[in-house]
Image 1 (cartoon, each protein chain N blue to C red):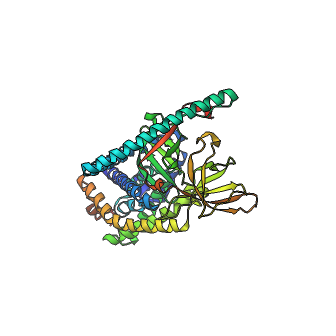
Image 2 (cartoon, each protein chain N blue to C red):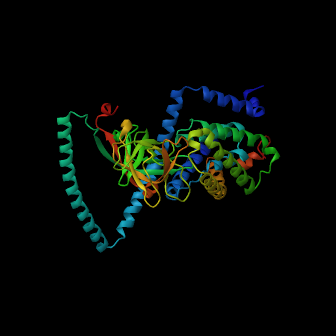
Image 3 (cartoon, each protein chain N blue to C red):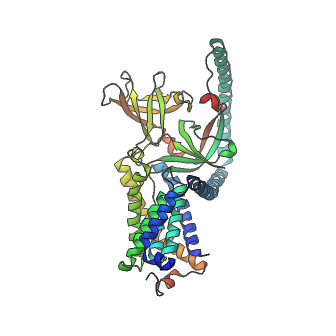
Length: 279
Length: 177
């Protein structure tokens, strides 16, 4: 029987051989194929992202001069207030360094901020992630925390030449240490489950018994700074309810995340300045 | 080189890209459309086994490269298996008209969608709600109904541009029809 006849008469045998060959293929080959195919598709996503930016630019061009002047004035006010905050921030930072030197405390990890546009949002049934327009070209490392004005966005999970993939905080694949704003006791936060047509959600576990929350008086939770990925004090979301878990030693509950998480256009990647210090 | 599988893989890459763009906008509503089933009808109904298997396997790899960290090649194996099943059964099934394309794509889409939790693992699969699964599945099936006839025609026309007339070829001795 010729090979062509075999292929025609034994399709399932051929399929089985193909699957076996794939399963036995070296991991390096699979990794190379994955990265190559991702990079092969990246320019198309890039082009779509730039087209959206251009679309936004032209839509802004249709605004009247008065409207733009008003916006510029608002931005100038905002910039002035940010200038003051930056000066306050610098003073506080110097104070923290001075106290750390006096008390010989370990210094907090320092970060450089890398602003990146969102190329693609992907809120699938089982996982949520973003593709951003910066990667190895901006020295973004795997595991770097990603934030926006509303708080935590997620963590960089894959880095490619000009893009990076961010696992969102609403994704069940992401678990971080959190604490109630103003309280120092850490507990666990995990993304999901995310119902359709609703705000992104998460859940908390191992919450101390003396913390209470309800939809009428939700508790704001922030990152605890444990684990060395996220710096402490970045907003995660608001705990809506807390109930005793099955063991009765801790509480668990649901967290509502920032509604802007589903419509992000720009994020900030915190690139650690001293990666060794974090480890 | 046989242009069939190259054209089909590129067309499927286009579908993956368009699906990604659709999901980018749908993210605002916390729903998503899963269109992988639409990759199958042309290969299942018209292609011979060898180019069809190669096209489906490579299309699956293209899909897996842009997806969350499932085992790389899982979609390739699923698509290749579904294609082989369809190819083996197609002489006993209706093959003319739009209905077989759409029904085949819908069934393939359900199988591929419901296989996702197995590929992702139990830990991740439990991190969603039944309402989300049902809404996404319903939305995906509606999207597949709209996309399949256009996508089937697009693939056929792309093959004709490369000098391959599958409909005519399928009527020849040993062809699909």
